Length: 189
Ligand code: AMP
Image 1 (tube, rainbow, N blue to C red):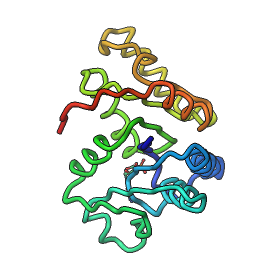
Image 2 (cartoon, helix red, strand yellow):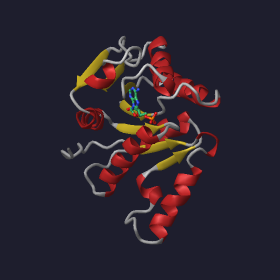
Image 3 (cartoon, rainbow, N blue to C red):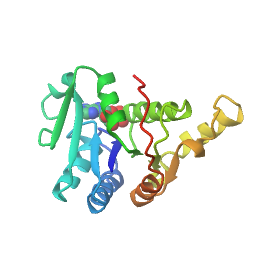
């Protein structure tokens, strides 16, 4: 399977987070999954891509020209580096190629990517599995807010019907493997 991972681009976070990115990289390699991700060499993105590569896995990075032009940001040794004109085009490539989505802790960029695939799933543009890797309860405040959205009827679907909350990378990949779907995503962008 091809797994799309959204995760932090920060190099300044607690060591527990790179550790979990490394664990996910090893787990992808062991299970023979390919990775498609934002194409960065920084933060958890870089840790993940380098780990999977060291284990012989296949890495596809998708990065907009503007970010690639910045020194040291792109993971230039990816097996495939797709360079897009825009951020939107980049998200489209990741969205289209993935069989499932795993989300590691991250900032605004990660949240934006995650919420987009979540929203598209609620709108039935796709039904592919999405798993949050909830390291140390990182996503608990967001999940509490999702419950509020559902309880107050701002959200139509229960959060648990859209996204699986996994304690660790193995749990996330188990869920994605079990819930793979043959039906292709609709054109969304
Ligand atoms: P953030 O969570 O704000 O660090 O953003 C990380 C997410 O946004 C990743 O999943 C990437 O797809 C994208 N992204 C943000 N910054 C970069 C960067 N410097 N290089 C590549 N991708 C990035």
